[in-house]
Amino acid sequence: MKNFENRWFVITGASEGIGKALAEGAAQKGAHILLISRSQEKLNTAAIDVKAKTIRTDQKILTTACDVTKFDTIKSVLEDFVRENGTPDYLINNAGFAQPGYIQDLTIDDYRRMMDLNYFGCVHTTKTLVPHFIKAKKGHILNVSSMAGFLGLFGYSGYCASKFAVIGFSESLKRELKPYNISVSVLCPPNTKTPGLDKENATKPKEVLMTEEKAKTVSASVVAKAALDGLTKKKFMIVPTFDGELAYRLNRYVPAVIEQFVKRPE
Image (cartoon, rainbow, N blue to C red; front, side, top):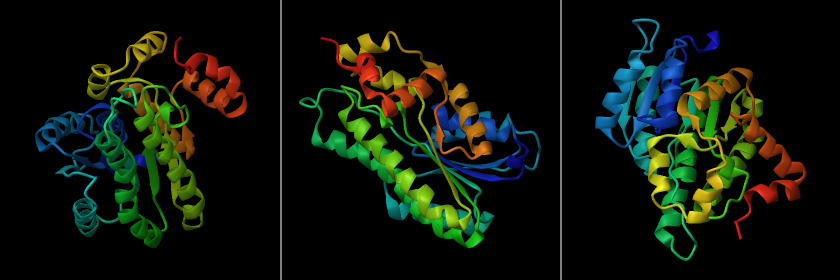
Protein backbone atom coordinates (compact mmCIF):
# COMPACT_ATOMS: atom_id res chain seq x y z
CA MET A 1 0.00 0.00 0.00
CA LYS A 2 2.87 2.37 -0.70
CA ASN A 3 0.50 4.52 -2.73
CA PHE A 4 -0.90 5.89 0.57
CA GLU A 5 2.39 7.66 1.34
CA ASN A 6 1.69 11.39 1.68
CA ARG A 7 -1.87 10.93 0.44
CA TRP A 8 -4.66 12.88 2.11
CA PHE A 9 -7.64 11.01 3.56
CA VAL A 10 -10.85 12.73 4.64
CA ILE A 11 -12.80 10.35 6.88
CA THR A 12 -16.23 11.03 8.37
CA GLY A 13 -17.49 9.19 11.44
CA ALA A 14 -13.83 8.91 12.37
CA SER A 15 -13.92 9.20 16.15
CA GLU A 16 -14.62 5.50 16.81
CA GLY A 17 -15.39 2.14 15.24
CA ILE A 18 -14.67 1.50 11.58
CA GLY A 19 -13.85 5.14 10.83
CA LYS A 20 -11.16 5.28 13.51
CA ALA A 21 -9.77 1.89 12.42
CA LEU A 22 -9.55 3.16 8.83
CA ALA A 23 -7.68 6.24 10.03
CA GLU A 24 -5.24 4.12 12.03
CA GLY A 25 -4.66 1.82 9.06
CA ALA A 26 -4.04 4.73 6.71
CA ALA A 27 -1.70 6.36 9.23
CA GLN A 28 0.36 3.17 9.33
CA LYS A 29 0.79 3.54 5.58
CA GLY A 30 2.09 7.10 5.73
CA ALA A 31 -1.10 9.05 4.98
CA HIS A 32 -2.23 12.45 6.21
CA ILE A 33 -5.74 12.40 7.63
CA LEU A 34 -8.62 14.73 8.40
CA LEU A 35 -10.87 13.14 11.02
CA ILE A 36 -14.47 14.37 11.04
CA SER A 37 -17.13 13.57 13.63
CA ARG A 38 -19.70 15.43 15.66
CA SER A 39 -17.88 15.17 19.01
CA GLN A 40 -14.65 17.14 19.37
CA GLU A 41 -13.94 15.34 22.64
CA LYS A 42 -14.08 11.93 20.96
CA LEU A 43 -12.04 13.27 18.04
CA ASN A 44 -9.30 14.45 20.37
CA THR A 45 -9.02 10.98 21.87
CA ALA A 46 -9.10 9.31 18.46
CA ALA A 47 -6.44 11.65 17.09
CA ILE A 48 -4.03 10.59 19.84
CA ASP A 49 -4.48 6.93 18.90
CA VAL A 50 -4.19 7.66 15.17
CA LYS A 51 -1.09 9.78 15.66
CA ALA A 52 0.49 6.89 17.54
CA LYS A 53 0.18 4.79 14.37
CA THR A 54 2.02 7.23 12.10
CA ILE A 55 5.37 6.22 10.63
CA ARG A 56 6.78 9.70 9.99
CA THR A 57 6.93 12.81 12.13
CA ASP A 58 5.63 15.02 9.31
CA GLN A 59 2.31 13.18 8.91
CA LYS A 60 -0.63 15.50 9.57
CA ILE A 61 -3.54 14.30 11.68
CA LEU A 62 -6.25 16.95 11.76
CA THR A 63 -9.67 16.97 13.41
CA THR A 64 -12.87 18.91 12.77
CA ALA A 65 -16.10 18.56 14.71
CA CYS A 66 -18.92 18.78 12.18
CA ASP A 67 -22.36 17.33 11.48
CA VAL A 68 -22.33 15.97 7.92
CA THR A 69 -26.13 16.16 7.74
CA LYS A 70 -25.78 19.97 7.58
CA PHE A 71 -24.75 20.65 3.99
CA ASP A 72 -23.69 24.28 4.39
CA THR A 73 -21.60 23.40 7.44
CA ILE A 74 -19.72 20.45 5.96
CA LYS A 75 -19.28 22.31 2.67
CA SER A 76 -17.61 25.20 4.50
CA VAL A 77 -15.34 22.81 6.42
CA LEU A 78 -14.22 20.96 3.31
CA GLU A 79 -13.73 24.08 1.21
CA ASP A 80 -11.51 25.49 3.96
CA PHE A 81 -9.58 22.22 4.04
CA VAL A 82 -8.96 22.29 0.28
CA ARG A 83 -7.76 25.90 0.42
CA GLU A 84 -5.27 25.04 3.15
CA ASN A 85 -4.15 21.53 2.16
CA GLY A 86 -5.13 21.00 -1.47
CA THR A 87 -7.51 18.43 -2.94
CA PRO A 88 -7.56 15.23 -0.89
CA ASP A 89 -6.84 11.87 -2.49
CA TYR A 90 -9.45 9.83 -0.63
CA LEU A 91 -12.89 10.66 0.71
CA ILE A 92 -14.28 8.01 3.05
CA ASN A 93 -17.94 8.49 3.90
CA ASN A 94 -18.27 6.38 7.03
CA ALA A 95 -20.62 8.35 9.29
CA GLY A 96 -23.80 6.41 9.96
CA PHE A 97 -26.01 4.64 12.46
CA ALA A 98 -28.74 2.01 12.66
CA GLN A 99 -32.04 2.19 14.52
CA PRO A 100 -33.50 -1.32 14.30
CA GLY A 101 -37.12 -2.01 15.16
CA TYR A 102 -40.47 -3.10 13.84
CA ILE A 103 -41.98 -0.66 11.34
CA GLN A 104 -44.94 -0.01 13.63
CA ASP A 105 -42.56 1.05 16.41
CA LEU A 106 -40.14 3.18 14.40
CA THR A 107 -41.11 6.81 13.99
CA ILE A 108 -40.99 8.85 10.81
CA ASP A 109 -38.19 10.83 12.45
CA ASP A 110 -36.23 7.59 12.93
CA TYR A 111 -36.44 6.93 9.19
CA ARG A 112 -35.47 10.50 8.35
CA ARG A 113 -32.49 10.53 10.73
CA MET A 114 -31.07 7.37 9.19
CA MET A 115 -31.53 8.68 5.66
CA ASP A 116 -30.08 12.08 6.60
CA LEU A 117 -26.89 10.66 8.06
CA ASN A 118 -26.35 7.39 6.20
CA TYR A 119 -27.27 8.64 2.73
CA PHE A 120 -27.33 12.43 2.61
CA GLY A 121 -24.13 12.57 4.67
CA CYS A 122 -22.43 10.83 1.72
CA VAL A 123 -24.10 13.14 -0.79
CA HIS A 124 -23.08 16.33 1.06
CA THR A 125 -19.37 15.55 1.26
CA THR A 126 -19.21 14.04 -2.22
CA LYS A 127 -21.02 16.95 -3.87
CA THR A 128 -18.59 19.34 -2.21
CA LEU A 129 -15.38 17.55 -3.17
CA VAL A 130 -16.22 16.19 -6.64
CA PRO A 131 -15.60 19.54 -8.41
CA HIS A 132 -12.14 19.59 -6.83
CA PHE A 133 -11.53 15.96 -7.82
CA ILE A 134 -12.56 16.74 -11.39
CA LYS A 135 -10.25 19.75 -11.56
CA ALA A 136 -7.34 17.75 -10.12
CA LYS A 137 -8.18 14.71 -12.30
CA LYS A 138 -7.82 12.43 -9.30
CA GLY A 139 -9.72 11.15 -6.30
CA HIS A 140 -11.16 7.99 -4.78
CA ILE A 141 -14.49 7.94 -2.94
CA LEU A 142 -15.32 5.12 -0.53
CA ASN A 143 -18.92 5.04 0.67
CA VAL A 144 -19.58 2.78 3.63
CA SER A 145 -22.77 0.82 3.17
CA SER A 146 -23.42 -2.54 4.84
CA MET A 147 -24.45 -6.10 4.11
CA ALA A 148 -27.85 -4.58 4.91
CA GLY A 149 -27.28 -2.47 1.80
CA PHE A 150 -27.80 -5.48 -0.46
CA LEU A 151 -29.90 -7.73 1.82
CA GLY A 152 -33.31 -6.48 2.95
CA LEU A 153 -33.25 -7.67 6.56
CA PHE A 154 -36.36 -7.73 8.75
CA GLY A 155 -36.17 -5.31 11.65
CA TYR A 156 -34.00 -2.96 9.60
CA SER A 157 -36.43 -1.37 7.15
CA GLY A 158 -35.14 2.15 7.76
CA TYR A 159 -31.47 1.23 7.88
CA CYS A 160 -31.63 -1.04 4.83
CA ALA A 161 -33.35 1.68 2.81
CA SER A 162 -30.60 4.17 3.63
CA LYS A 163 -27.78 1.72 2.91
CA PHE A 164 -29.40 0.45 -0.32
CA ALA A 165 -29.42 4.13 -1.34
CA VAL A 166 -25.68 4.36 -0.66
CA ILE A 167 -24.98 1.45 -3.04
CA GLY A 168 -27.19 2.92 -5.76
CA PHE A 169 -25.52 6.31 -5.31
CA SER A 170 -22.09 4.67 -5.54
CA GLU A 171 -22.91 2.66 -8.67
CA SER A 172 -24.15 5.78 -10.42
CA LEU A 173 -21.12 7.82 -9.35
CA LYS A 174 -18.72 5.12 -10.53
CA ARG A 175 -20.07 5.41 -14.07
CA GLU A 176 -20.41 9.18 -14.01
CA LEU A 177 -16.94 9.96 -12.67
CA LYS A 178 -14.82 7.36 -14.47
CA PRO A 179 -13.92 9.72 -17.37
CA TYR A 180 -12.36 12.11 -14.83
CA ASN A 181 -10.00 9.47 -13.35
CA ILE A 182 -12.07 9.38 -10.15
CA SER A 183 -12.64 5.97 -8.59
CA VAL A 184 -15.61 4.94 -6.45
CA SER A 185 -15.85 2.04 -4.03
CA VAL A 186 -18.51 0.86 -1.62
CA LEU A 187 -17.78 -1.04 1.61
CA CYS A 188 -20.32 -3.59 2.90
CA PRO A 189 -19.21 -4.89 6.30
CA PRO A 190 -21.08 -7.46 8.38
CA ASN A 191 -21.86 -6.94 12.08
CA THR A 192 -18.76 -5.22 13.43
CA LYS A 193 -17.67 -4.82 17.05
CA THR A 194 -18.16 -1.09 17.52
CA PRO A 195 -19.91 1.22 20.02
CA GLY A 196 -22.61 1.63 17.36
CA LEU A 197 -23.36 -2.11 17.43
CA ASP A 198 -23.78 -1.97 21.21
CA LYS A 199 -26.39 0.75 20.77
CA GLU A 200 -28.19 -1.26 18.08
CA ASN A 201 -28.42 -4.32 20.29
CA ALA A 202 -30.39 -2.36 22.87
CA THR A 203 -33.37 -1.97 20.51
CA LYS A 204 -33.15 -4.97 18.17
CA PRO A 205 -36.29 -7.12 17.84
CA LYS A 206 -35.89 -10.49 19.54
CA GLU A 207 -36.05 -12.33 16.22
CA VAL A 208 -33.08 -10.31 14.94
CA LEU A 209 -31.04 -11.16 18.01
CA MET A 210 -31.93 -14.85 17.55
CA THR A 211 -30.82 -14.78 13.92
CA GLU A 212 -27.59 -12.94 14.67
CA GLU A 213 -26.52 -15.53 17.22
CA LYS A 214 -25.44 -17.59 14.20
CA ALA A 215 -23.70 -14.71 12.46
CA LYS A 216 -20.04 -13.82 12.84
CA THR A 217 -19.09 -10.47 14.30
CA VAL A 218 -15.75 -9.06 13.16
CA SER A 219 -13.45 -6.40 14.51
CA ALA A 220 -13.24 -2.88 13.10
CA SER A 221 -9.58 -3.48 12.26
CA VAL A 222 -10.51 -6.48 10.06
CA VAL A 223 -13.01 -4.34 8.16
CA ALA A 224 -10.52 -1.47 7.83
CA LYS A 225 -7.79 -3.75 6.48
CA ALA A 226 -10.13 -5.13 3.84
CA ALA A 227 -11.26 -1.63 2.91
CA LEU A 228 -7.75 -0.26 2.49
CA ASP A 229 -6.73 -3.31 0.47
CA GLY A 230 -9.80 -2.78 -1.71
CA LEU A 231 -8.87 0.86 -2.24
CA THR A 232 -5.39 -0.16 -3.33
CA LYS A 233 -6.87 -2.56 -5.88
CA LYS A 234 -9.56 -0.05 -6.87
CA LYS A 235 -12.30 -2.58 -6.23
CA PHE A 236 -15.84 -1.29 -6.46
CA MET A 237 -17.68 -3.68 -4.14
CA ILE A 238 -15.65 -4.41 -1.01
CA VAL A 239 -17.16 -7.14 1.20
CA PRO A 240 -14.68 -7.89 4.01
CA THR A 241 -15.56 -11.49 4.89
CA PHE A 242 -15.97 -14.76 3.00
CA ASP A 243 -19.48 -15.20 4.44
CA GLY A 244 -20.40 -11.70 3.34
CA GLU A 245 -19.05 -12.22 -0.17
CA LEU A 246 -20.97 -15.50 -0.42
CA ALA A 247 -24.18 -13.81 0.76
CA TYR A 248 -23.70 -11.04 -1.81
CA ARG A 249 -23.29 -13.51 -4.68
CA LEU A 250 -26.11 -15.79 -3.56
CA ASN A 251 -28.48 -12.85 -3.19
CA ARG A 252 -27.53 -11.59 -6.62
CA TYR A 253 -27.69 -14.86 -8.54
CA VAL A 254 -29.82 -17.30 -6.51
CA PRO A 255 -31.88 -15.19 -4.09
CA ALA A 256 -34.13 -18.13 -3.16
CA VAL A 257 -31.16 -19.78 -1.45
CA ILE A 258 -30.16 -16.77 0.68
CA GLU A 259 -33.80 -16.25 1.67
CA GLN A 260 -33.59 -19.36 3.86
CA PHE A 261 -30.89 -17.70 5.96
CA VAL A 262 -32.28 -14.18 6.31
CA LYS A 263 -36.02 -14.69 6.56
CA ARG A 264 -37.85 -13.84 9.76
CA PRO A 265 -38.03 -16.87 12.11
CA GLU A 266 -41.56 -18.26 12.37
